Length: 331
Image (cartoon, rainbow, N blue to C red; front, side):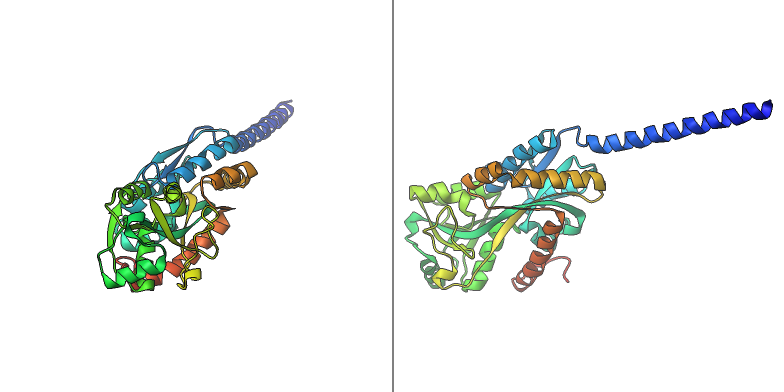
């Protein structure tokens, strides 16, 4: 009899254990499926009002609808974008704190001592690329790249060019142009594209190397002239402005934007973030919205973003090294 009771007890215990394991597995699956349940923070390491801020607010709005929770943009400018990136790179890797990273982050790891390396971020999704541009205040009289080059060569250092803080994208652009065109200007750094454009309009600057969307309205108003676009083809917002190549200068350069998070985000959460951000940026309505705002969108997932980072690292490092800008982590 005792043997029979013991056997029955063991069977019941086994059944309970199996049920509990099933419940536990279902709870774990449900937990994964529930992500995200709280708002997601998307840090933009540049000031409000610039192209990066506008682009990421468009992304955040579209991604919020796909993820089912608010995606809040928070601006954390400073140190050429490295302060905002550091805040996210050192945050809890739970998928709730993300950052916009861009071409300057590649340069920052070699030019800023406390900047995070690209290996300290997890690429999630690629937004798109802005081709580089040089613009001039209308009063300078510059109408094309040749006018700029001729004046700069005859007057070394006299042209005041507005750019962001090293190693921002517009800083990299003017450094590249100086080297490729054989000119010397006075670089004047600002904390983002918006204040750079204000300074150009006010007469503090003669030229600026910010992207097309940041100056398009002033170009249309006639207060700023676009001298040349450093792209394979002309920009859709200003198809009448020739490329550098069309003007006899073989220069193609640009700055991309992407979304990343800290290293260590659980694989299931990372997959959800990647798929939802890419889905959001692939919607025809979103593409039309960003085009109206002046951006070129080219959504890619984690693999494509990682490949682009490696490609640009290989391209930018020699330029930085030749220009004497590599101060840390020399290869």
